[in-house]
Length: 491
Image 1 (cartoon, rainbow, N blue to C red):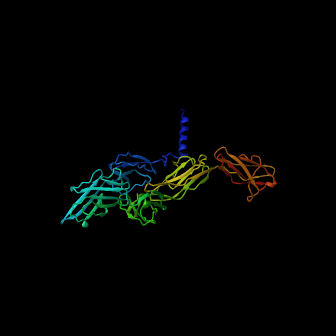
Image 2: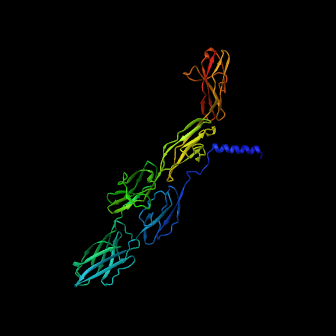
Image 3: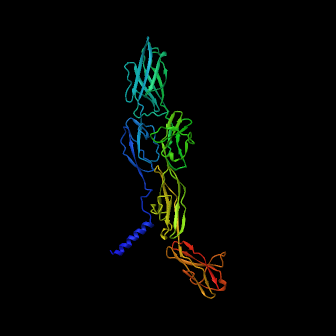
């Protein structure tokens, strides 16, 4: 390769480095997070990869003798996961409740001055067990009717429904059942009971009505994490269903290791909390305690991310080729703020970091070239929390520039006056000379020789004395620029 060719290539690379911005990684590239499932004794579930802002699949695990209750975000199973969008690595823990399979009743019956305890225990798949021979059985009446002797494997007891069990045995003579004391428990929970006393010779029955404890409110819509600009209002909303009138109490904490405290923000006792953001609230978490007649259920925590705010957006700029265009923003956020201007060839192109002067300040300076016409520029501002926000896009329009303006000309009547311009811009350039009678008249296209070239020729007449002439140049981008006016004096 010849030395002259190498030198030309080096110069071309240097020019390209100045005109075209440096390429950087796309700021909008997708981020992924990992979701791990801890089943707490249930079948294993493999982890999954979730894109930022998407949702975990939440598969339903299985565990023998248990019913799956739901996924929680903490090992203590206090914070229910209701399916909020994933913005970081997430660990989910399975919660279970054991199926009701044990019913017991204890009866104290005074007999001849002594108190005899009848302890009857019944469990899944077994018969009544009692050391006394007069034990008969313990039975159940469920939705499918009378069932004696054992609980079916398929029996599942739901909250809020009443189940009836009864204890039956043939008593010995001499028992005084009028003073009997009976206590009944199902899975350790005391049940209501009433008796049907025989005549001392027949079966004595204790009916035990038992309703499983009502569940606390169910969160049907968890509050979603928010990312807003400083000064804007973030809204967190929860939806729930329960028994009676629901009550709401929003709480907040500085981070996941801090204690929850009741919020004083607007809507703190409604289903929607409104938080006016400040830089200091970045990373805070918010949750809602929902209370009904049966208890209180906390929602999942939602995290607030506070990004910087562009208070003054960059404006479109229109300059002549070779001049400097300036784009400026004003931003607010947690100091110190960092600036990175980006550019792209058009609205469908990717943003890349700019290498122009001031690219890391609040003001970008761009020396206009014909090739930069239509380019767009924006600034990405990053605050001390690492939160970034991009400004609106501003467009650069580059017009032709006159390097030589037409000059005033004085000639004698009958002679030819010449007006000439020199212009630069994206080729090919088009010329159109215009004229007007005086400075207060309208411009009209000239019909003189050379009216569509860089030089206009005017044959002077007495009537043209004081007329003005200018040239409008249009480049290949369709951008036009008019020259300064030049005056013709006819002697």
